[in-house]
Image (cartoon, rainbow, N blue to C red; front, top):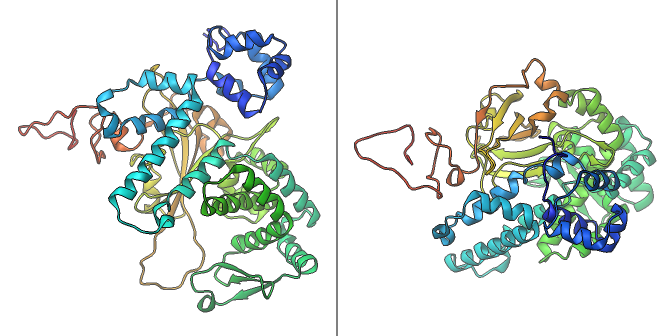
Length: 475
């Protein structure tokens, strides 16, 4: 049955869309050519969304109809399931169907629960750990808050894309001369000079700006892609600092650290939008089949910079493949998570060990591909994703006893988009071999997993001293 044939009760999503667009019911009703009372019935799930309304929504607000009408985003369900797995709620035994229904019908309420849970966890940290500094107690919250701000916009800021594209053209429109042009403009317009300093002077810093001497100091160990990024970053900050401050002010950050971290995230986005202007980058990505090595070359950027930019291609009428991205270290700690599309991984934990992102450390510099399949949704539907994994080149580093951590980056999209990727050539996309993965172990209900590190909180263990099974936590 097609999306237009079955009855669609999308009240929660419709209401969330209206709020995101800052529209009143009357205004949206006018846009859709329906009465405000009828729209109210749709938002309260008292009427199904008809094919005519759905098509009008898609044309008026440039919606991806498949995403809007599909099962609830698995990341939203996984986030809430993770919260409800806390021992505080264990006796409730919340069914997955109820969780899915809540996320679909009341996404704002689900988000409120996530925020409340995060505040609860931070309060527990205060009770368990005797630390006097509030800044230390909140060291995780600025990153969480900033990630939520970025993800609430689906990692896409069209005004900064436009700013970056204009700045790229103003600097000559040539990626190969961008660094020199940005350096000249810093000097001529702001009196800021650029100096390259020995690692022995820079110590732990890669980039440092001295406002008194008006000097941007860069470590000689920076790779070329990082060097031009640092110079354009400083230029963007000098040109648009007031605009960035206003954007951060409107976001109402809970503390100074969160505000500064969000400003840095926006600055990084603007810098990437200058180095890789949306139109050029999107067209180049489509033309080369999202071959990251071919894609990064004409823009002079790193593998990570190009991969990160791919997660931002959500411009209406010119969308790219909706990628998600995760960066981990060799211990599995997650330092980056971004998504333009569905993101099937744990919000508070790491990635499933069955995803070959972890195996990338065994083959440095090599791109590994894999089709992964996440657990079934309450409706019984399983989601499949095509993924890439590769270690990252961190540039020049001095000898430090060998005690440094490598990083690996995973990039993926829903399997239905894989035919656009050069990496999927020769793969039978109609029925590919898929590796079953899950969220963090304590939420994963997949049985007999040899990689399981913790029992699922939603299941009762079936332990027998007479039997040894594939996992230490049979259920």
